[in-house]
Image (cartoon, rainbow, N blue to C red; front, side, top):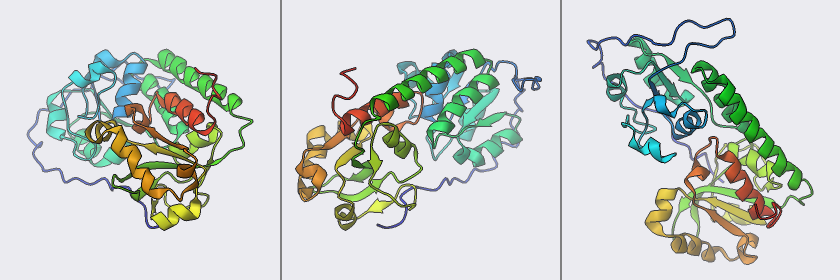
Length: 303
């Protein structure tokens, strides 16, 4: 086991906005309840945020999003403002938003935007709690508090329903693989450690994380490390773009070179390729249900 496999947020932004016309904020002062008047022009800097905005009924106010924001289908038609690590600040300003919703990792871009008069809202997405809080915060900030409360309540009910159905699980040790080199055998494996979004889903789905120590959130594992863990179940998250490019057969075939692993020997390797599997947003319950079926097939009664 080696160090973590996350990439730091880093981007230099030139001083090209000094003569830009300042944007008048459409969102007024906070009310006594902490809410503000509805925002009419919103830009999202993350796919999970875009999904939240559509889920709570604010999709028609979105005027820009990242090139990775493709769900729901309407999101793919929005003007693009860069990606996760390369926010195009000039493109954001040109859209004249009165609110930009972002992740804490976008702090650098947010600072520049606020200097030119654009209001920003940062919300978290690293845990189930943060995702649920993001729904509430975005709803309140944008004048959709009731809709956001309903969406959050629905998600919470479905999570609890899965918890009840999996409560009798024998909690097999499970490894959640979030990336790897797609060769003839697994290599460069990056897995979800304790305290992560995937770890929480795993617990709610009736599993037990094979990584049982407080290592980096997403540690890299060598084949020797995999053999040491020897999980009973392996769930691999494959980005939809990679699945389309490589094909499921090649991705699945890569595990045949690790036949000494218990999960491989017993046929308990599940590959998840839906785009929701890589986006910690309102569709997290779909991923939770897939985890539950991978851990205890049939536990959800075919729903």
